[in-house]
Amino acid sequence: MASVSSQPQFRYTQPPSKVLHLRNLPWECTEEELIELGKPFGKVVNTKCNVGANRNQAFIEFADLNQAIAMISYYASSSEPAQVRGKTVYLQYSNRQEIVNNKTAADVPGNVLLVTIEGADARLVSIDVLHLVFSAFGFVHKITTFEKTAGFQALVQFSDAETATSAKDALDGRIIPRYLLPENVGPCTLRITYSGHSDLSVKFQSHRSRDYTNPYLPVAQSAMEGSGQAVVGLDGKRIETESNVLLASIENMQYAVTLDVLHMVFSAFGPVQKIAMFDKNGGLQALIQYPDIQTAVVAKEALEGHCIYDGGFCKLHISYSRHTDLSIKVNNDRSRDYTIPNTPVVTPQPSLLGQHPVPMMGAPTQQYNGAPPPAQYTPISEQTMLPPSQAAWGAAPQVGPQSMPQSMLQSMPMQMHNNAYMPPPGAMPPQVGPGMHYPSHSMQSTPTLPSYGSDRIQ
DNA sequence: AGCACA
Image (tube, chains in turn red, orange):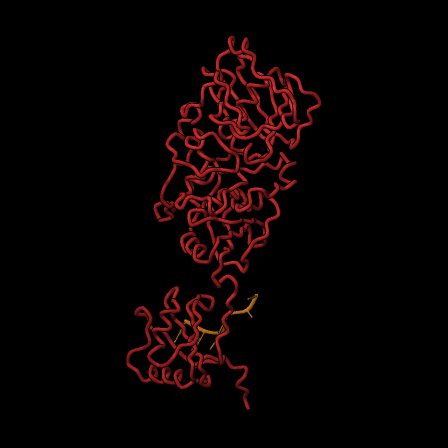
């Protein structure tokens, strides 16, 4: 007797099953279409589409065997073949008794998305760019990134599955808009599924992971030390490692910059703990220590490239220092520790003020320590503070707990890029467009969501 | 046009 078992299971050899096997389906046939097809014959309890190498096969499982038989019988004698979108599909009993749906976590909606960034330059996509892209759909709580065999991947956590779904639906299969990437970075496609996670564990703010809900999360030590591992960020600019200590160098120092002037300028953004001034390469440099990173970030963003005195004099260049706590040995005219109580803080000498121009910036309308600002100092003007490209920006969310001069709150855009801190969900204005967080140049403030439509895809 | 895992 010839055994049947080795025979390919063709034609009518299959015994009846609640499960029907369909082939020759149109491209990307949906579950809904399968249900439509089977519904006249009974209750479709399960389906599986896009099966097989060509993804043009499918399964339909009925609640009852008789329903499957009814469908097969009907089309066996019908002059009209079964059709989906006008295309003839062929049915037969499946050789399985039930559909096993490998519903993985990737298919179950959740608040965390698994994002695979595809493209030769995928690794050059910074966490900040990802944050920008996904922030368009809601508050992004956390992001972690990692390298797997699948390539460069990220987990993006939203508050709920609905928000995550809207982001997934809009972004899956799209490329990251070119204007968000440095020019030398090639196209990067986003592949998005759901993650099984619901709450990511982020221990540190780093170039690999961020927790935007926790402003006080420490910055990873690894991110602090390696200046060499600076990441290429937006526009190909290096993203520096943030620090609570700023290194300021002063260019075109036509006028003497004193400790007190620096103290005043930098106090506009929060309490200055320590300042140390020193000469380097024939110029003056200073280290300015804040209690926290976010204050330093705000101060750096606001002051970088600006001049202490009008007329292009004493231009500030600011970077993050690798120090986190300055060691001030002695309080003198070059260094000071403002955290030590009862330290006499020398106010600017009247004689000096008479000889020198009035600093153009840095005078807070209200100081963090409650002391009234020296009357001699002109309050910051918006024009002085804002680079032209940023002047059109709208009001920005308040950052951090520091009491900031009201004039600054209104005029200064909070540049959130590279910033480990984001305000908690409650502090976010309801419709902050992603433009809000964009770095100044090349990005315009957009009150609406970015379009990922075909006009942007190229 | 021919049975889904990886």
